[in-house]
Image (cartoon, rainbow, N blue to C red):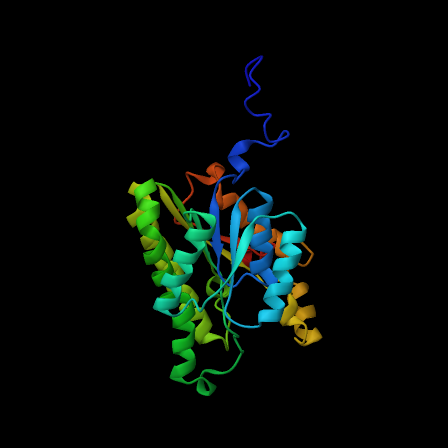
Length: 266
């Protein structure tokens, strides 16, 4: 910084390329677990964040009250992100309330039970495709006209390490996440001329509320394999997402970043 140039002091010492002031983010499935951590991370960086959920009103409202109590800006929006009409309504309501969507984080997910292939049926496969292929497509199609008009945007798909690691007895989920990864790469190429980046963040097993009843033996076995020798926490994922959402990551696109303590080196 040149002598006398105080242009970078406005954010109390934080480089403004890591700030999201004036931006609006939509994070799907964001009233619990990793999604809520991502929403908080984006809001702490200055964005106005739309928290989305599809069920469990009481949990969502409690999460949003805590969000507001921290002094964070945003809104709470109920909508299914696998239904086209609801997605179109969701985007319209978010933009009317918070402003044009600059950042889309595709995170909503259903349960993913581990089972041998013989125990899955096609309906379950279809549910995975609905969340990880249909939903990203419909959400992107809804926000892209505005992003293209402004020639700026961030689309961040939340993937999973299971695709890179080829986890067994998990085939529908792994296949759908693989498809989402391919979609991310194709969209990154297609949207680059509009200065819209498209990336994927793929967490490892990071215990959150929905893992409370997972067998301790399975947790211990996984924990023993993590090269960084600790459990990941939701804030690890939130930090990566927040970075990709900002100007500091403006030259990063088509990437799949694994947030798993090095598990994909095995």
